[in-house]
Length: 299
Image (tube, rainbow, N blue to C red; front, side, top):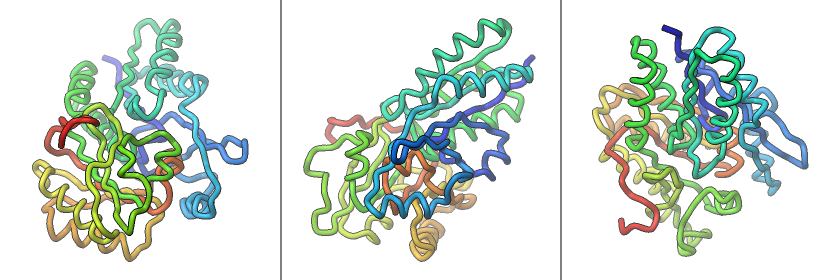
């Protein structure tokens, strides 16, 4: 039986520590600034989180690309040459076309490796929500689960990724076309802050408005506490776009007070998601109750 390699992409926002711990690699997307493309490194090789988010705070727009075909060919070829079968867990197709590009690249490269397998999975998520599915797959592989069993298990658990995110404004997400909402949600109306989820189809959508930033953080923690399943067996993942240490300490204190989890893993929101969501966004992710809500349905 061939060994299994778990791959994800730049939208997964896994830190270098997590990538190493779970033996996961990723396909690189690109950020684009002033017409120049830069590899979207999750280990921040080309600029620091503060540098990226300060550029955006200054009013400059940073755009992004999906994973290029040649990047898929590079990373697929690397692990096929090493004798691996590959499971690629990519960003929600509602937010990136990378999974479909990966399928095209896989079909092409597998002509040279007729005994190998590549499966490209739409995670229905982004940010560390995509990342925790890759971690789950890696843990299954480490336990000796078979290839088809891992693919089936990941597909079955996609709608159990619970996400709650708040931002100062939906403007960046609206410009990037990454969020669906009625016009009533857009703008910054007297300090009202939106809370976003990833719906059952992988669409980013605001579902609640809370007055004030501090209240929005408290509400996210309360919603996670209500919907997380078996918290004592898992971590809460906290991802942020260069938030202050004071704010991070505050929300970690709330989590510890309300959620009896194994621990809190804190990561930066990476270059791709960060370019779309904007500075000072912050969110929580874990496995929880099945997501059934779809944009447009009554909540």
